Length: 497
Figure 1: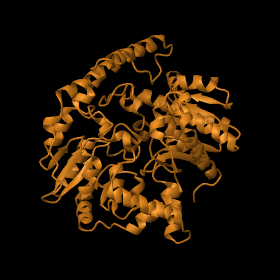
Figure 2: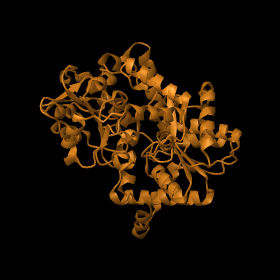
Figure 3: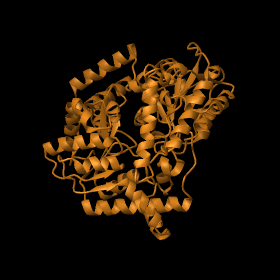
Figure 4: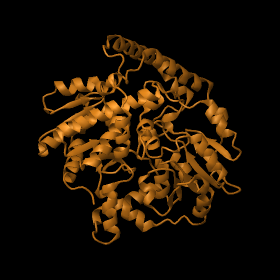
C-alpha cells in the first residue's frame, strides 16, 4: 500500500526486499504524483499499480447494485458495511480536504454506497489479477485500505500492518490491527517458559528503569517543545523572512491547483478552502484558550482523560463507537468517586483545531479540569490515579508506570490485567471503582511483554520519514529501511500462530 507520502518509503522498502529475494511487486497508490514517481523510476518494475483517484472517480459511472452490496456485507461486513464509511475521513466527514472540525459528508448516502461498490470491485479485480502473497499496510485510513485488509485476510494473504510499538522509535508489524500479533505470540511463549531471551530482557529492564526515572515519549513530534502550543509560536510565520516563505507556499498552492488537470480528484484541496480553514484556525489562536485552562494540582486524586487526535485510525477503526470524545469525557467524569477530578488535556497535534465551544462544554462539567497543552502529558499520567482513554498512548504509558487504565477500543495493551476494555458504558463507574481498589499491576508480565517487544521490533524514525516528500531525501535512512525490510522478510511465509 503506497499511501500518500509513504509511497517513497514503501518503494525504498521494496528495493531492499528485492535485494533479499522478493521477485515481484504490485502496488495501490493514492496520489497521482506518487504514481508519476513510481512509473518513472527504474529500480522496480511493478507488475501493476492501482491508482486510488481513478478507482474512486469510477463511482460516477456505477449503477447501484443492492444485491452485490448485500453479498459484500455477508462476506466482508463488520458485521455490516458502515465501518468502511466511518473509517474514510473524506467520504464520511469531508475531512482532509477540509480541516477538522469540519464534519459534513460531500456525498449522499446513495453516492457513498456507489463509492463503496466501485472501490471494492476494483480491489477484488486487482487481487484476482495479481494474486499477491503478502500485503504491506502502513495504516488503514479509507474504504479501499480497509477492504484490502479484510479481503487479504479472507484469501489467506499474509498481512503486515506496521505499528509504532510505543517504545522509543521501535516499529513492529502485526497481522491483526486489534493487537500486536508477533509480539503477542512471542510474549505467550515467554510466559509459558518455552523461550528465554536474556539480551532482550536486559533491554526491557533498562528501558523500564530509564522511563520511570526520566520519562520521555516515543514521539518527540508530539511534545510541547516541538509543537506550536502558544500564540507567539503559532504566529511566528509573520516574522520578517518567514512571511515571504508563507506567501510563496500559498502562491504555490494556487499555481498547483490551476495547473492540475484532475481538479475533481477526491484528495484535491481547494486553495480557498485551505486559506479559509487556516484563517479560522489562526483566529481561534488569536482569541486564545488561556482563560479556559486550569492549573494542575498533582497532590489531588484525579483520573486522566487525554483527548485523541482526530481523525485517525485509533478512533475511526479501533474505537468507532466512542468517537464523540466530549460525550465520553462527560461519562468518565460522572463515573468517578467523590473527591476525584477528571483532568482533560488536549493532544498537542490538535491545538487550535478544536473550538472554544468544545472546551467550554468540557468546562461546564463540575469535576473537570482542562489542563494546558503545554503541560507534559507524561507528567499528568505519572501522577494520575487512573487513565481513561479511547485507545491512546497515554494508556500504555500508564501501564509502564504501573497505573490502571480503561480503554474503549482495540489497544495492544488491553492484554494487561491492569487494563480493562469497557464494553458497556453503564459499567464504567464499576470498572473505575474496581481498578482504583486494586490496579492488578503485574511487573513480571510487563517485563516479559517488553522483552517480546524488543525482540519483535526494529528502530526506525518512521514519523520523521513520513514527512519527506521525495525519495531523494531518504538516503540517510537507508540502514533503517534495510533493517525494516529484513525484519519483514524474515516473517514472510511464517504467519504468527
